[in-house]
Length: 337
Image (cartoon, rainbow, N blue to C red; front, side, top):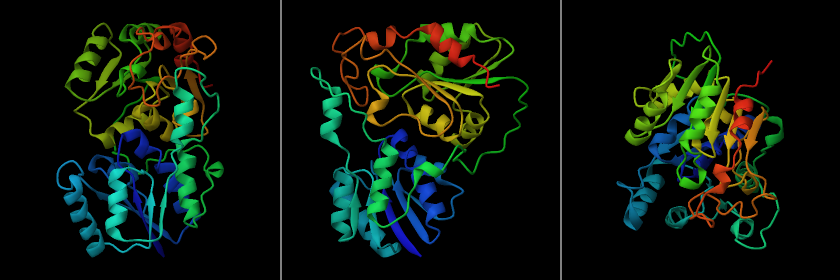
């Protein structure tokens, strides 16, 4: 059995998109084993895969800075045995880890930064559809000699170890995750409330968010509804994965919750503003994904950012305010039958 060290830190969405790639690699390479180096909170995603071992690394505290990465590298050399490094991050941390480990057989992701910049520049934007992140990850594994065919994985729930919950599901479950990391990806809450008002009272609405501020805003949204439950701190991440897996549809932004729902095999309705799925971060899976956005022909400034973290050129976030509420409501309420 050949063992590979996989490096990928960063945001939840980036980590989640490694899951279908590694799952496919496990199925198509039964003699391969993967040690995933990532942040502690993301280890739950990989549970249930015997060929995947997660090393939860706190790079902000215990292994912070150059000295911390040197300490981590020494620990890896002493405690782990692996033949190759698969760098799915390509940042300063992964650079020093590879340097300190002194491994000649390392394979690094090509992020295509020039094409991403061309896609989001203010003038003369490129219209090319860039590689999906999962394909970029898969190419790294293929360089290392692994077989990874993402076209045969099909629709499924990639989360294997779910927390058993007494769900009592007796109605249509609609999840709504109205938040994202950056302002350029967040649909105004008044539009979210309009969509909620369009949902039949016989359906159950689950509002997803985390942190005190988000929970406060979700509770404000839920005040006028009897069929709404705020999903927050009282549910662990593993329990939230169980709840998401039981949904009929998820309304979300371009966010980690979009990827959670997609990888759980759930139909998604995602609202896109400053960012664009052509950049390679769209939902993964063969189930139906409804992407709602203002066409570039109507708003040529889109997309202005890969991550939604740049100031709006127009200073009005028209890319979000011009989204048709009725279109979103119709997609959310569409029957799967």
